[in-house]
Amino acid sequence: MAGLLDRGEHRLGCDFFARPCVSLAKALLGQVLARRLPDGREVRGRIVETEAYLGGDDTASHSRGGRRTARNAGMFMKPGTLYVYQIYGVYFCMNISSQGEGAAVLLRSLEPLQGLEAMRQLRQSRRKGPARPPKDWQLCNGPSKLCQALAIDKSFDQEDLASDPALWLEPGPESPTAAEGALVCSTRVGISGDWAHQPLRFYLRGNRCVSVVDKEAERALLGYEGPGGGGLGAS
Image 1 (cartoon, helix red, strand yellow):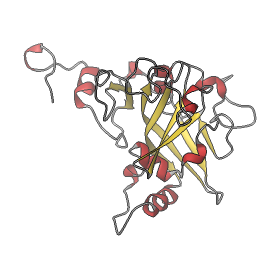
Image 2 (cartoon, rainbow, N blue to C red; image 1 turned 45 degrees about the vertical axis):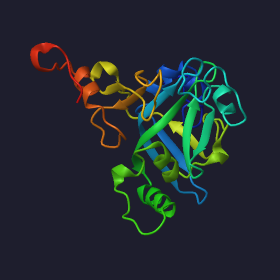
Image 3 (cartoon, rainbow, N blue to C red; image 1 turned 45 degrees about the horizontal axis):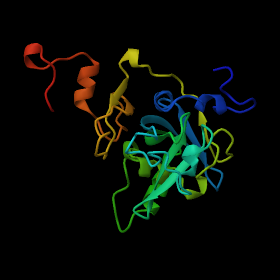
Image 4 (cartoon, rainbow, N blue to C red; image 1 turned 120 degrees about the horizontal axis):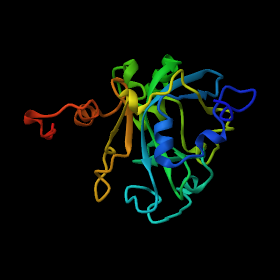
């Protein structure tokens, strides 16, 4: 981990983020996102699901065709810059810029590790009307859910994850590898058009906090075949 950690702090530094988008999306799996709340409490979650948005020809990317706006400026800033945008006028999604013009990684799901009650309170405070408190595995199993649980909003847009005092990335206890069969490559969620079938979503197999499980991709990863040995049909 030498050269990747900032001295004096248990956080990943600039060098960690300086890699191509797909490489960063995979490298983020297993790392720990930490957040210091305004009241001083700290919450943490292990990253278990990401999506890569490549810019350029990637028609699902906000920066497709080199499209640069005030809203997506963070995607064009140095690797490790946050791009936080709002959807439906209510929810937020958090991305981390990578190498590549307008490329960034969407954080889709976390496995809660610390401060679960604080996360639950933050999730509950955003719900309208009475509702059952989310279970532990439901606290951060979606891009907007994790932003709610960690109180991440537009104020973090264009901040540097390598130096921000309230939000940072710590090295996870272990780094999963594709060779171990832990890393699943699948299609991104809710994407249509020419890039809908590109395998640009990555998650940790067997983790309950993953938002959408792709059973076919998991079986292919493990080398299973359908009847007759001719591969898998649609599941």
